[in-house]
Length: 247
Image (cartoon, rainbow, N blue to C red):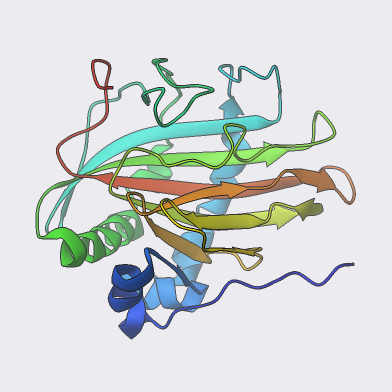
């Protein structure tokens, strides 16, 4: 098997300076645990919920390879509040494939979002956002994704290299099962620099300043069946959730 290029891991005490300098940083599972005061067994307890995701019926490429759930939250300091269930919406400027659609997905399961570790995770990551852009409420959209190889190939980012129209993005790897591919690529939004790597350890986390970088993940193919790649994607936005009427 081809040797996977590991992500450049940033120590927790260097996370904010690294994000400020280059607009992206990767944490190991242990680093995420330290940053958010969450025990890895508590995070692992959620992994079974990825088996309960529902098909994404909005894929405009006709694919059947993506399953997901979606819920929204507001973080104010150390307090986390779940927002009323709402559609996921992005403008065409940020998602040329699926932008402009109100996409309604089933909410995340209560066993995940009511767990104490969930609040610690979101509040800990929001605290990093506040250190970079000032203390304020953060509007968080949480997406559970399973990309499988039902169609022979699975596309984690069918829209290609993109920004999400938010302030910060966190991509947490949950599982890789019998797959090859799924390489992460990060590029300067307004420059020539970029890097590529493959997240392989569960709970490795990529943090992105969405105004400064674009990102994508390459397609996956099966090494055996069944095969999938599970992620948790968290977006953090000031000024409220995205919605119709924005450009």
